[in-house]
Image (tube, rainbow, N blue to C red):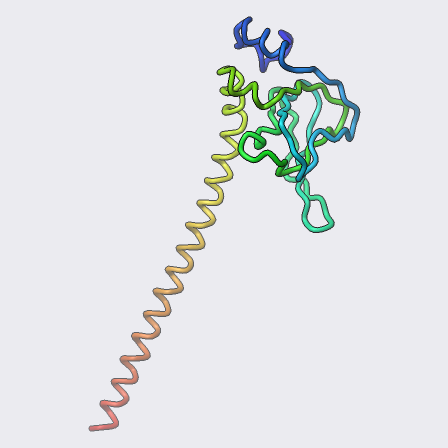
Length: 167
């Protein structure tokens, strides 16, 4: 475990905790870690290799992320929702740590690792969604302003024509 950068800043007590509460797994290509919709009470820390995250859309499976950085964490959503919200499998031979999510309630270093790895993509997604929402909102406001302007001109023209006809 000391050979992996993801654990280098952990104290010896934290590393011992992880070793006592996890199992290191070497998996072949296309090994299913988590199946979308199934009950999940583990999270995984990638040590070497690559994970692919996918979701189901009717009969198709849509790949939404590829994770290849040591320290990437998957399965963390089971803290919020016990059933997996996506499927996770290895793309190539991989090594990872498998831990019960209950460990996150007992160890600050693991919680910080989880936050460090999951917060930036979440913030990025929210910022992107926010930009799209603001852009759409600006477009709607512009459309509404244009509609108000056209309505006002039409009203003035109608009043002007009516006034001209009565003269």
